[in-house]
Picture 1 (cartoon, helix red, strand yellow):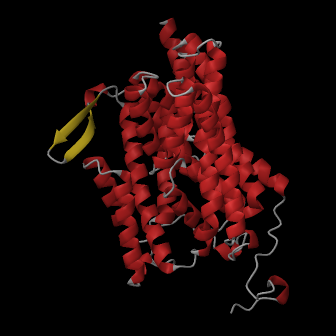
Picture 2 (spheres, rainbow, N blue to C red):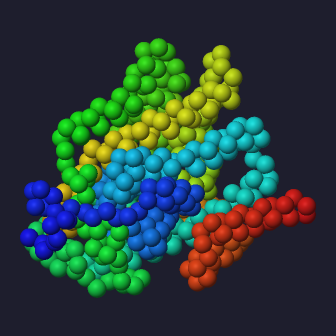
Length: 471
């Protein structure tokens, strides 16, 4: 047994986490800062959390951060928001998880709601289009910086690099579904760890890193499992009852009162289903939503879905906030006897509620059992391999996004099992390329913060569009 003072043991003799000394008020301010800086989709958001919580504040150790991230990658829904909820719960119990998860969503909720009003009222205004043009170039640089940062930490050896490369090839060239990639990586990691291969051990490997990683023991939280993070069946039943009621009672009432075919009932049912079946992170969610909302329900057109994605990519908060834009347009265009703007607002808020309420349930119910498995080498090996695969998947998303930001035309190529998008080189956008290069230089070489980089790129894009209008 670990040699600890008696004051740090509970009555059963097991190690207890000491008081980490992080005031809850300070944690609220930090979570608000993370929320406001969470641009660039899940890759950028996870990188922001890592930089602030691990590198700057030293509240969470490297291994614990990656363990939580690996679990969130397996859940349906937005992994970055769930990671914030998990880490907030670790630090300050249920109230910490609620505050961290809610604050992570709030800036995006407000921004997307305001932009939805502007979108239906004014359409594509020149200066607004210019702002988004510049922001997209900067967001691409942020995503690549996030891949670099997470990859340095997660790809500890050649085996992990190979898993990441294989995941990239599988999804980029062969369009292999994300869940299949995750399952294969998990099996490889589990078998490798059970076989005691060094590449899958917690400390194995000699991959590149950005300085020494923060050990769990040296973080404010420490390496032991907090008392509140231990499995408790009675508590699990209570928390499940509360969040199931918060989630499903409004859905049932809408269906009972209005019946199927009503836009609000359809929104509640569809996005509740989405919260359960969309494994694979935010981009898997978007693919499912785009198909159903455009082709099945006809709530918006393909071009409008891309507009919504652009809004979500260039505003803080989860990328999945694009679903609020979808819900807004759906209710705005089918308001019944209600004012369209009021209907759109309620539709957007309802979408956000049924999308994110289940996320708290997955964390509060499952995280204690995942914490218990933190020392299990086989499980840790599986989760480490999954994280390596996710690096390859995020790189694919960065490449896909880059093609659509930097080039005006992209062709889809099908050749046997191969399926990939290829940019038409002659359609390169030189201004977008210049803004992307400047943002990359600012982040990688000059180490300018994310927010100044975004603001600078947005301002440059707006000036470019204004100059074009004047000419």
